[in-house]
Length: 56
View 1 (cartoon, rainbow, N blue to C red):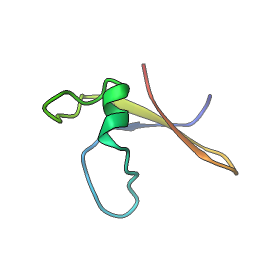
View 2: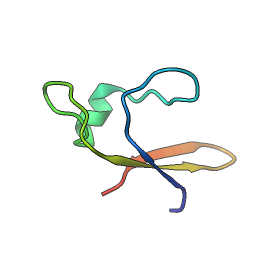
View 3: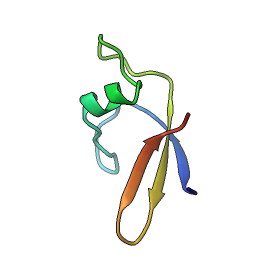
View 4: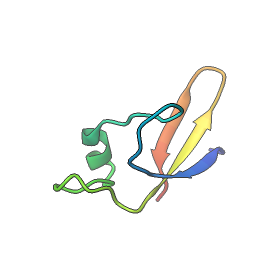
């Protein structure tokens, strides 16, 4: 899968994408203290959908 690699950041505002904390925990990107890991996400945009997944 091609796409853009973006750093995971805890920011709000326009242009951002909200990912539920439970999903981030499942991906291993947030700990039990709700702290974000230093991680990157792959974002792939097609005509039909946007796919976001952690970079391993």
